[in-house]
Image (tube, rainbow over all chains, first blue to last red; front, side, top):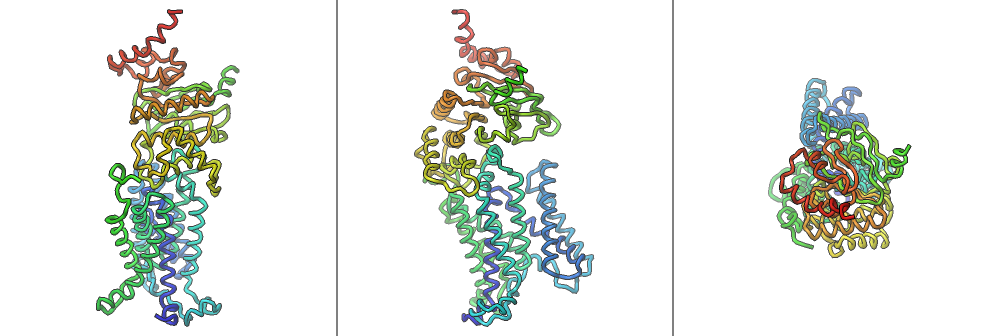
Length: 309
Length: 266
């Protein structure tokens, strides 16, 4: 494919997909190890009422109010989940189930009751996103990457996702040791002075930021998949957290690239006429990677069944 | 004033500690004053609040009431002088990390967020592993260790902290005899170096052999003092509420015999 075709049509969705995948996979590593992986699922569901409320307040589908609404809803959900978990003294999975189903249902009701039929705001959009629609109209080829005028029309999702990714990477690097120690041994972490509750909350908020920034471009399916599949597959490849995180980034990138290519060309190769949803295909590829890792991964056995070394 | 001085000098002084899970108090109004440079066993039946007392003292659990001082100051100001070894079962041993990495966690207060692990740090961690006899396992994944080996790794991490007060929650639970010997050897060497050791302990038959002092608890404080003074039939029956079987008491008496007879020989 030539640059003239690739840059305007595929470069932005591909990069956005990669950024989303990595931004979600990084915090996903810790969420999976903390047995909180479903929180990604919860977040991507609960943002719906936040977006609807933002729409009702501003009366338009614009980026920043919707992001703020989504972030607000995610925060309410996180606090609600922690509250239910502590007050009810139940496990966090159950608390998440209660909060995110209720908030998602509330969002659907709001959406139905409000006059949103004339704008592009629907449940389907929130779930699947629309990666393919991120077309860079003004690009004519690779040279456009150095053309300020063309760059100005870059779909806003790409720089937004890039900033989010930088933020997630910084958080992971700076708080690497506290995250690792408190995930492994919370009691010990507290005795050496770590604010483990605050850290746990920060992790969830960072995950929420990644999810909220991602969902508009790619929908929540891909977010849920990227929080869980690359980290879980990476865990089966190695017994060291540093390498697990590196593997998860590799898997996330591979899933994003292969998923995008398969979605665009896979059906054509098979003789079908239309391409399929890139978000759906990326999530599917990440699931296949997890399946392969579960069968062939060198460290898929635990405890006494594991090979020594 | 004497009580104040005693509290200021104690490595671990707990006053009025009350902790509750739901309605029932797990620990009720407990005072404890640990003697410096000694090994103290916290003893009591299951559910007596032994681990809870330690966790509340360290601030891991939020008590309803009570204060803790470490060498006369608040715990938060003395964190660098405390090494805590949690129950082995409290963590997920499938966590993707190696033995040496766990020991290096003990150096976090020195390393901070981004400090580089230098050869000196690594050498220190390896030295701590050697002290518990685990130097050959440095690069093993922690899930591949036996229970006793895991416990020794936890102890090595505590050694890396270079603390003055060592608090251990059931360090001998579910470990093999060799590990028990290795651990008690390390703990005694810590005491001989002037450190203070407090351990939640289950095996009554080894109390007199391993420890200098005992603290008996059954939700409330039952007895506190040297093994000779506070570890006897009466205090044990008080703590265990008559639940100790005859044979168990027999075995204890055999252990205690030399100590109880000692005064008569003089």
